[in-house]
Length: 539
Image (cartoon, rainbow, N blue to C red; front, side, top):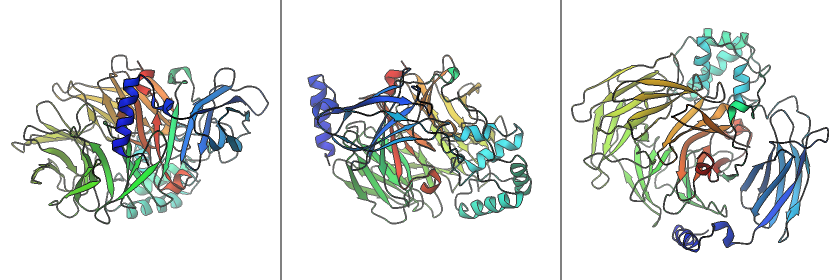
């Protein structure tokens, strides 16, 4: 694997020379035309060239004449695939690409009865818009993409209740499923015949404003037992890092070659959850199940593990600045949420000293999203309780209150430079802007209804709010000034994105695709997804 140091030097000299990294190696091109089942050229079809040896797949969209072109490919064996919602895949197995460019035409097939290419939003759009719908969406999409055939199999009320009870038992340590009348919820889902039919879904409708020129890369990590929960891009080198929640492994991925290096965690049973870099270049990781926090020196490959958190803390997330880096307060401490303790932790990275601040509300409260405003006030959301609030870390005084709508599922939020919180509301497929200075709020609809968004990431450089819109197999770039969004459609089935990371050196936007477990996502590995030069495509 190219080392972090070597990769940094390659990037540095490439920038000096005025060339891209892609130009430093031999590259080939695959091109051709995609046809629909009747033989007509088809626009807006995902064409993916997958190199199994490198665990790397590159995707583009066909143009108005059905043509596609995938450049900058390594010589080797590729599986070439055409995919579009509403059709079956067109596949050309083992396309050999040498030093010369290659050509291959593809033909979509008729859709199959299982409708695997139909996104989760289409199945949810078919449900009636009653208040209990938000309860269903918030309860289930905390872990799963509801487009999975394993999730949306038709069931009786008794069958749905059995599933709900099973999920509650399996997630007892997290308590993330909304507390509701399980009999009522199960009867409603069964009566709605969820999974029997999807609503019509046009992924390229005009209102979606899809970035059709986007190039996407996917990197397979781990195996069928893995849970590649969160990832982060090193701002110095561009190397992508992902934590395997189940296998206690930290994985580094070279974005150019796909080469990987695995670093075993220094303790077992970590539950490697949230990853973020700080301004000193260290990678911070929450070891959720071990009640610890780790700092990893990516230059030396060395760990420092911070202890002192109580058992059952389930340390969750870091407060970040507007560039997505771990934020320090006036004392130099970093701020973390305790999902299992209804507290906020303030950690001194140098000494390891911990201060804890109790949050308002029940001692059994579950703080989920976290942010710190310009005055040092800590803000948080509680997903399953449908609450938001704040606390002053100096006085310990604070307040919490219900979200504007019931069962909205306030997910992982971010704060901008004007002290606006950007909070994804999973239950309604929207994003809430809340100003911590004035209390003013606005709710923005995303391009796809029922998109069950997971995370928001404000980016001051593009003045956009990036949102993982999982029901639409998409990432959205919302313009706060206009309320309009650009949609980046994603090629993999069940593209359930979690936290968003941005590489400002390239303009790339990244996320981990992580519908748990992997078999629910119809694959035997985790995935990292990279949207090349996404920042340029929204300017």
